[in-house]
Image (cartoon, rainbow, N blue to C red; front, side, top):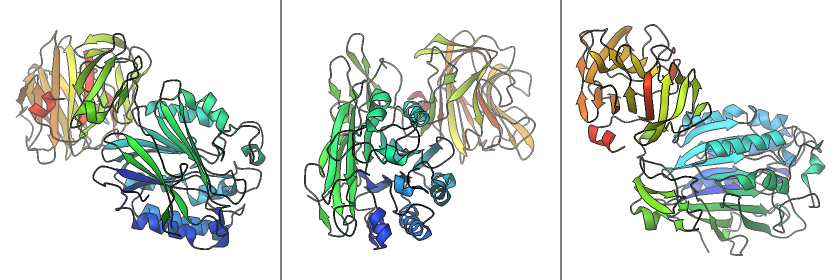
Length: 578
């Protein structure tokens, strides 16, 4: 049965099995498969491409074969489709040493991925294990759904598996897909010591993990891995496909897929490829298999099947506030809360109180929110960004777990949260925070991007102490360097001894910034400034902090909770709705 995709609702990921014999024979099939993906990008809304490895056949530099691989994969990348490449034993420089990937690294260096991050709007983040491209991940955004796509070396080392799980945990709110060369065998069992073509035949030493090792030692305890797909194994000239689904220790379902056609026909596999069709509205997924040489869809149970795409279990409840999450399964009751049946038009997410089984409904954050620090951690040295990847490191004295309007927050006692250098480059945006001021005798920085001195694009959002211009102690202030001059805008007064929601919206076309305090908006010059300056947050070389200027001065004294950054100029009603 042919795949039917509604591009307004669904998208697909194209996955190639071992292509080594196409390249060895130089028969044009690999290039034809790539062209089919490019030509059908719109028809099937193909939004990502993955390869399981063994892209070419001959060990060593094999320049002519690598030229074919680089050309074929380059066609897909040039079409604006994010690519994640797995590596197999035949992609190595030596037979028996699958870790020697010198030529692969030269042909597809890490900056090959960085180019995607720079040129494709859908690629939000890339990362590698050690700076090399064989262990890599991409965070992509498709149809408003953020996904984590990963590739791991053949039979990964222990340290690589640790890294992989850390990446999965960091992005636990995103469904994840993994390609690796050996994981599931053609008979549907995970690869173990007795499996034919065990990866130990191509890897020196004992630091390797087959499919059983990967699952039992690491992956079965993850919470967001949706699928693993691999190739490599074969037995004879048969159509080789298999899949299985297993529950993790947290109750998630991980679908594992094997497909390899290299022995199927004399030409190396008739151009068979896998399409994973994903519906992010109701979180269903379908696996389809297509031959580009025969223009046919396969219909067998191992080549056309449905699988679970995403569940998100809650360890605690979210009864107030806004959350961004996927479908939920209630751990104590097994009930599935689907987007269609429980979210209505998709603007609500459900929170589950596992203590008593109660379910509460809270609005989800809109897409223009690009960072959210709930500041609800009660231990550790990291404030997690719930939306993106801008986690903050606690510097100095900060007490966690203080009572706040939506749960807990942080008490700033001389410390601050370090976001690193150039965390934001925004021509327009909005910063929102809950604050509790102890006093107004000093300047309290809420959010600062500042390199020290007068540097264009430096951005400071604070409660003033009345020491500059016509600002009174306790007035909300935003200041910025522009054209070598310092400018400040003053807003409403922030009271002490109570929780207050404050915000600043700024940037392109806004006619100057607007400051908000608990529903009251205002903006006036401090007597030295031009109110029409757009006030972008654009100094990419400046350190950025929550609770201090970028240079660590004028630290916030008091409590703070739930800090949000949006990439749009929000109105007062939009701020109130967050």
